[in-house]
Length: 467
Image (cartoon, rainbow, N blue to C red):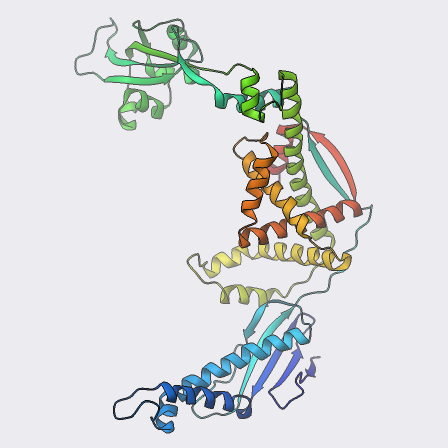
């Protein structure tokens, strides 16, 4: 049975506002706006219009009031009524401490309003109330925490990736498996003679490490500048895209290529890794920070462990979220939320109703998690301080540098980049939200039983593909 709650939140004779509870999560707010609520303001605006009006036949400021009212009265009335609705609805929600989802929506099938004949108006709005959630966690709740092992292979691979930025291509005499070879192609017949009208390509470049056929590759190894190599291009490079690139023809023509080609070597280059010396250490870590290969490995290992820890925390946050959403039954006003999303679906990236319906399950899951998170924050009085935001900005800076393989930058680079982030208000809001998320996860980690599991890099990556 519906319960009618009439609440006049003003001590004056201003408009009446009531709320009718449809159920635990849905209510209807009714605003009744009478003439005394808006008449003084409408008259004030029209007087201001009259002062500024300039019309043929009348001196400035002397246009008759009746004419001004006829011309602008209805538009001003509509504008002032809309302002009253927005202002008083917001006040009502705030003073009654109503925690709503989305925004109030005009109730469907309301009686039409005629601003030309009516002087009293009634407006109804549907609102959705946020459900109350009591988050209960204990050590009986288990969440895995995956630590990524920094193996020798992972360490060596990362060091090679770091140091290779300071390597360079150099000319060499003989072709090896690592060579990049430049030369001229000429199509030849079975006797090795040039085919008349056949395919030719000058200054083509091919990489030995993508040659697929070992027999064809063997024909190239050990050759030097000025020598000829006769081989079957399609056997060496079965991919038509690769053939079209090295022979400088279309992909369609490459599909029909057959037989042998003579390749005259003009240049052989190889990428040479830099020497592991003090000059390289200084470039990578700053002057004097690392003084030996052993120190470099230890430094990189520590940096990798820090980087992997961020990934481990991210995975824990996903698993913890899934655990809490599954454990706590959160009922949502789904029909209202669907209607609200469609009503507020605007802008260049507007979605169709079908797309919104398809995204709805994910939206509901995200909202449930947000409500659970808010309940944790409120129940435990979790706050984000200025220092939390600064530390989170540094973490964000490190992660952005890591995307480019820069895991061993001096702290001053991190600090300067973090300072730049904090100059942008949008970035500050994003960083503050991330800092709050981290504090919530820290609380969850203390409240539940965390089961640590050491995994390899490959095993950790599969945890995401298996979901």
